[in-house]
Structure formats: C-alpha cells, structure tokens
Image (cartoon, rainbow, N blue to C red):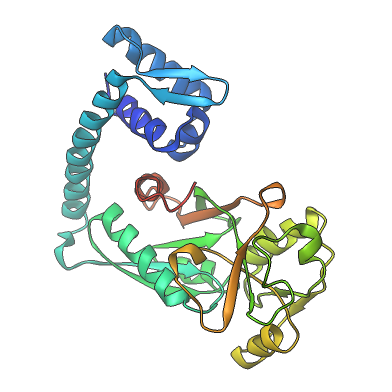
Length: 296
C-alpha cells in the first residue's frame, strides 16, 4: 500500500470513474486500474464495483476512502511544511498567481474563489492578479507571477502547463435579449446572435469561442475594446458573451446566464502553468479543485 494508491482511491470516489481520476492525478487509466487491482489483491476484497456506466464503492471502499482522506490530509500538510521550510519559512511568504481571464462582470468574486483554493493547496498566502494572454508568459518569466491559471493551454518555451480539470462555459446576455426566456441554448440558438471575442485573451477565444465555431456555431464574432463597448454589445446589440464559473458568481445585474444544451456543450480545460524547474505541481491544485467540486 502506498500514497499514490490512496490518492487514486480518493480521486475515484470524488469523480465516480477511473478515467476522471486518472486525469486528476496525471496518470493513465491503465496505471490507475493496475494500482487498484494490486491494492484490492493486497486487501483481499474489492473496493469498487465496476460497471459499464462507471464505478461505485463497496462498503469497504467507502470506509477505506474515508480513512485514506485523513491520511492524505496529514501527508499533504507535511509536504506543505517541508516546502515552506525549503522556501525560507512560508509564514510571511506571498505566492503570486496570474489569473488570465477576461474581466467579465463579477470576475473579482471568481478571483477570490481561486485564491481560496490556491491557499488550501499551497498552504501559504496567495494573491491572485488579473493578466491577459498577451503579457502573461513574459510576466511569469520576469517573476511577477509564480504560476498562471488560464482558460486553455499555454504553449511556450520553458513553461510547463497541466490541466486542472474542465469547465463548461455558460452564456451571458442582457435580460431583454430574445434568447433570455429559454432554459438552455443550442448551437442553433447561439448562431442567431453575435458572440463576443475578448481582446488580449486568445487562450480564451481559441478554447471557448472557436471551440463552438468548430461545433457549428455561425455567429458573427465581435471584439470590443472597453467596458462601455461591452455594455453596448450586450444591451443594445443583443450580443452573447461566453463566461466561465458563473455558477459561483450569483446573479449578475441586468443580465441572464444560461447553460448550453448538453449535446452542444464544450468541456474547456482550465490550466496551471509554471516555469520549468520551479518545483511547483499542478496536481496539488487539481486535487483541491476536485475536493471542492469546482471542476470536473
């Protein structure tokens, strides 16, 4: 029995499948399946019931997972203590995280949520600062940020990028928009209205807007340059804006947020990037996000 097996057990319990657990832990499905078979062989009883629709824990699996969570909490606490000691006593240290997200309504509330998750994962004080796709990599290299969180992956020399999980965008519109009375939007609905392209956020545009274009959306794609133009786009032109994490933001004044129909929904990777050799791992964040049920 080892720590990796315990992490796999808790990830499977959190996500309900071997494949999702493997993605969270940065492992292959085969590696997770092999580790669970070996662990069950050592214990002498199954921890999970495998079916075509997923996995569910046996009573022993439930009890084992509960104990494993306590062991992992202590182990993670010990790891954070060692890292803090190595970095020169983390008590007064502030970790700087660049948050590459378009400045939509109430984005500061979302930023606060990211800060809470980051502090739980790292065990030190964290500041989360907004940045954009054009500048974020150079700011990371210059030392302004210790790491970046982006919608979609970063590909740059000397940068290590890992997926924290996925999130499905929702669609923001004015209350008076003709689509606002619907309960969800299809690709055909979205195609009837112009869609916002966020300036300076190409990771977002490529991973969200262009992903829906690839699914068949034929909307006019419009870039706006400031808050006034954004408001005019929503309230005067009846435009649509894809938005991330709206379920954590509460009601947005004068606006409606609708989900995309399940058959048309795009799962967008939320990524964590650091400089190669920094010693930071996106897996810590992934585990914290899974536990808080923020990403899938």
